[in-house]
Length: 165
Image 1 (tube, one colour):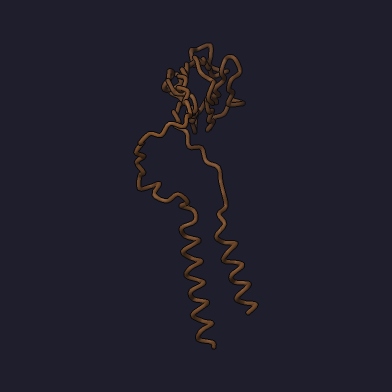
Image 2 (image 1 turned 90 degrees about the vertical axis):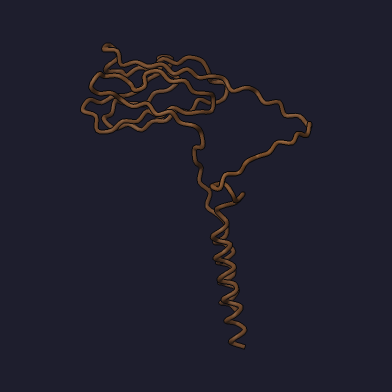
């Protein structure tokens, strides 16, 4: 009986998911054109709540991306960089940025951030059809496997208990 209680406790604990945070925003990637010492693309337009990802690797010369008013800064110059900045709601406008060591040779760029329209939440009922892609079929996809596994183990245990009696 102790084995059954112990196994049931393990099964119940295994069904609780471990939660991880992920960035679900749209991301625009800006790389480095090292031949011409330019950001590529040098001008981008995004919306609030979207992100810009500065990504380059294996560069002969180190680079960084610094917004001229300090809104974002990828840090020290690096030959390999993977820096993402999310423009939160309310942070919109035109943002000029540059590579510190190569600003004088024209390694600059501009990010234009469009405001996201405000949504008014009211008690009005509307018929909005929400399409669910096959990727997002389950409301709790992380529970599917642990629940299946739990049911399988519990049914095996009950079968074993019945055969032992």
